Structures are given as structure tokens and as C-alpha cells.
Amino acid sequence: MKILLAPSETKISGGKDAFNINSLLFSSLTPSRIKLLHNYINIIQRGDRETLSKMFGLKKPNDILKYKKDIIYEPTLKAIQRYTGVAFDYLDYSSLDQNAQEYIDKSIILFSNLFGPIRAEDYIPEYKLKQGESVGEIKVEKFYNECSASLLEEYLASQEILDLRAGFYDKFYKPSKPYTSLKFIKDGKVVSHWAKAYRGIVLRHLALNNITTIDDFIKLPIENLSLSEIIQKKHHQQIIYTFK
Image (cartoon, rainbow, N blue to C red; front, side):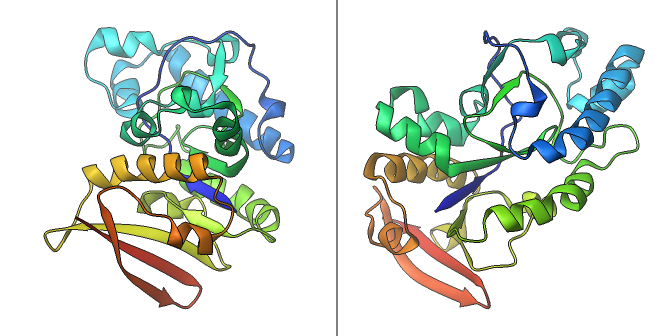
């Protein structure tokens, strides 16, 4: 089973290992990634504050200045450790035991706004790119859909898929084979912030219990959640959870 996960716009600084773009998932994507990265770095080097503010999603000059750097030479961390948003906080990767961390490393595919589909264990530098923003003339989600969707289809052909991404990332890749997603309901309404938290909680439960099939996942109790319904539409299965 493979788990699709959205990235976070917030990231932790630091790391130690040098960046090797060839080491990321799908080495055949390297020329495309280099093209996008060169565009990204060229825009940063030109230093147009208004352009950078929009691309980074930042307003304060000091915040913008922090990301005006050539990320090729920046230290790296595992992608799953680099991202620090709500889902990642609730996953709390660093507190997992070695077996659970290895489960996360091998099971998760993240959809980076700069590097495209990558493994949780791939090492990436710190960067800033607001979700949905173009890099110059390149619309990132369309760019990666065109150059990586077929690679993902082949890579996932023999796998069950649990899609925990936000809907925006369907623009990068939407499975054409059977896949499962989740929806969280509270007081009759779909929740957003707590959905992010519970994606992290679900991931943590999956890792701690070494869940390798969708059937086993459906049987897995999740704290404070009740499985209320499973909806099947063509090849898309959606599991509906309600808060207890």
C-alpha cells in the first residue's frame, strides 16, 4: 500500500547532507526538475520583491530575504522531517520507533510544490513556494502532471492507494486505478483544520500498526473517530469518519 500526502508550506530549517537531485523518486524526472529549479533560482537572483512576495506567499521583507538563496547548496533533511504543518505535527515522526519510521519512509509519496512526487525518505533542502503559485511562466501542478503522472501510474500499478492529500493535489496526479480517500465530519459539516490533524493521526496509527492493506486499515480503530459510511464511485472509495 502506498499513501499519497500533500506537503506543508511551513518547513524546518537546517540539515546536514548535500542535495542530490538525482536521488529523488523518479530519476528520469531530473531534467524536468532542473528546468523548474533553474527558473526558480533565476527569479530569486533577480530579486524583484513583489514577484518573490507572491511566489513565496510572504509580505515582510525579512521573511522574503530568508528564502533568497541558491537552495542547491543548502543542507538537506528527509522530506518527512522537513515539513512542519499540522498533519506532520500530529504524525510526530521523530517520536516513532525505528520500524514505524521505516514504514513512513517507504510508504508515503509527497507532492512537493517544487520537486513534484518524492518519497518521504528523500532528502530535500528548505525552500519556499506557495501552493498554486507559478514559477515564472511554469504552472507547477500542470508541469508535474504532464511529466510525472504516467510514471506514478506505472509505479503504483501493483499497489493499493490511500490518498490523504488535499483536493488541490489532484492537479498533480489523480489515480486512474482504484484508490481510497478520507472525509471527516463534525456536527454534520466537513472539517478542514481538524482534517489536517487527523491525517497525521491516521498516518501515525498506520505506522504503529504496520497496516499494509486497505481492508486492514478499515478495521483499524482511530481515536475519537467513528467510521460512519463507505461510498464507492467508480474506482474511488471514500471512507467517511465522524467525530465521536
